Image 1 (cartoon, one colour):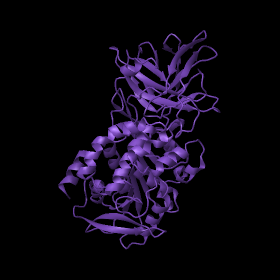
Image 2 (cartoon, rainbow, N blue to C red):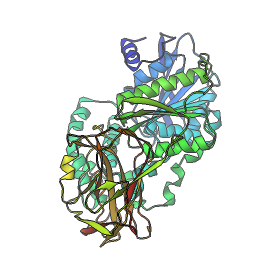
Image 3 (tube, rainbow, N blue to C red):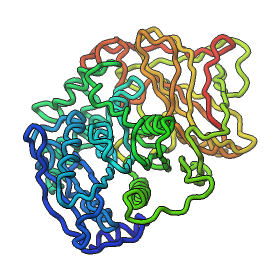
Image 4 (tube, one colour):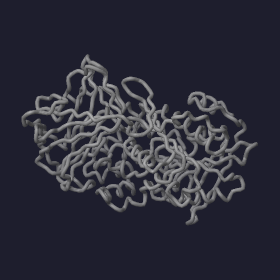
Length: 540
């Protein structure tokens, strides 16, 4: 047991170690096409026949040594593999598209090894979790005994074009990161660390590029193949993405623990995967905390939950006694109250919808407007409305002061009266907005905020929709939430038509995502009244 792993385990509050002398062995694992992928095997010297945990990473292996070590110290052996074309593995890295076959080939190779016990689990965070989903969907999926999945999803297309819009800054940031990893082999050299200091400026320049197809040339002079793929296959329903949709695996997945964050970039889609597994009767649990995508507290929770599940499912220790009510299926953190809550399902049972109507006066009320009215603003894609806080990849705080955004002329604000008692909003959030616009190609962005008695407004969750010519309804799905609006606080809704560069600006011209250069100012009218009851609906 190393000092680093001991301190890491203590900081994460992991279950106690049961092995101390951990060895490593380099592996070369052949794929069906002859390509060899590099991996490292971590195992306790006195227990070489322990159950196996497979982790497949596109981010190199050296940065994850301590994670592999803490699993091995707790009765498992770990095969930590670099994806095709990364960190010394042969082949060309094509995001998402080789993970199902390569994952299946890796499992079948592991099965043939003399040290394999016949018991296998998968663990993964973000892209690593998506590779686990790929294995679960593959022909090797039936051989997996348990899954640990942290801030991840089954279908990366859902996140790439979230709610119809291209998630620009996340895709730019991830592309810069991956090119650095591919170039350096996953080793964090001094040069790569210095380059990372320049990445923010580079990402901002790339996100502002018009047309967007050329943004990859700022990142790499020779261009980036997957960036061009994303530009070419942006339309809804494009079958190009079908091979990397692993959603069907939710119907047959083994015992699984998921962890997620209220300000994570994958949350709505991870909850869709959870509910699909829940409906299929699978043994799946989820914990949702007040975390962003890269929050260390969320990673620690995933390791605790996954190690406990793996030890029980793989026979390393006896399962803990279960109460008459069983283990909670959903454990979530109620923000604003700083409380953990347990529920049997998602959405939580015994909840009811609460609808708040937007009024032309700028009010937000349970009472619908009695007469017709409108609220207007102009959106200029040449000067797009900026994004403030929310779910991003870069680890920035998920929530913060929204005053700067609320002062803008291209933003509308609707505010309720102070709450007379605490209101716990736990579950899905949605809105139905009646919109008139001079262009049929436009976006709608809404943000639910909490306003303190002192007037400070902070974001709770938000929703977004890119409208296409064939769209007949403006129903907007928000990030789900669990939040207490305290007595004396007011709810507020921000309405805009952009959140740049979180979502790529909508030029209003109807041109393809990658090739748009014409900017059309959108004159927006939000309608209110008996015939146009624009409103937001909470689950309370």
